[in-house]
Picture (cartoon, helix red, strand yellow):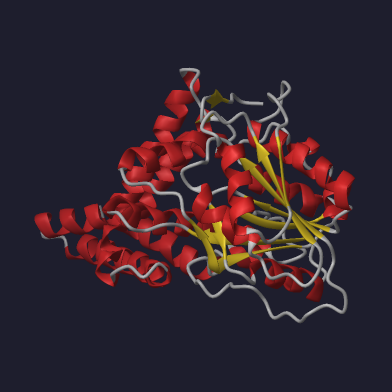
Length: 382
């Protein structure tokens, strides 16, 4: 037990000091200034059966106070709940930015539904208005009135090809409060924002709910055609842009929010498990390594502490307790960001256990032919 506790503490010492300060939440939109000329922007919204959330999200896009030309292109990806008609009604009622609603038909072989819809929307936007930037945003994302203006100013100020914000997810139910902050915390651990934003670093990621993309960079990187099969499309997009020489930036949002509810654990489980094994590139060895890593880093500290106390081993208890304390300390900034009680930090090992089980379930579903299932479509390994 002493060796396990020591290994866990060593892992947490490394994560605390050497993993890009992933635990800090101060990476927000960088310093920016208004450009001399506001470039034209096309807002592309892929939507499939989103009638439940569209009344909360689409009006926020139509109400953008942007000094230049901006238009919204909502791509109805085979919805059966009247998403397209509802979008037109909302535009008629609320006014604001011009809205175009169109449908691309069923995806061609090798394409995921979202990327097929984005391809159609980008093509329509280029034909209609020749945008300099594309705001790719999900149908469940609500934006503050100055969101587009601030994104464009941030992109122009430092000549960035991608500016992406991790939308603040909903934390209303008990399960949302337990799982959601950890989701963003784990994402930051995998893709430390400071490494993402460093031009010379290999790490690349974006948050698919809010991605401002320079149209020229999209063409240079071959997006979306080059990533047409990607289940984790936001990370794939960022990698493609960075590989082609583009400059990307990713941070936490202050006024960009997801309105999608996850009232039960089952919905959150599906959200994570549908893409977890794809994140591991469908490789069993990576799955085994991930399970072992999660166990050592998140489960070992409380178990070592408990075992040390039960057996009267002071070194084991001390090592496990110290590792658990470091873990909780790194989680506090994310709990503050989400306005959650700080006393819930010691629950992170339990949440990590849930994520471990979700990841294993993702692999099981993949081998049963039901991996990466989303709204009636299932995607296997490319």
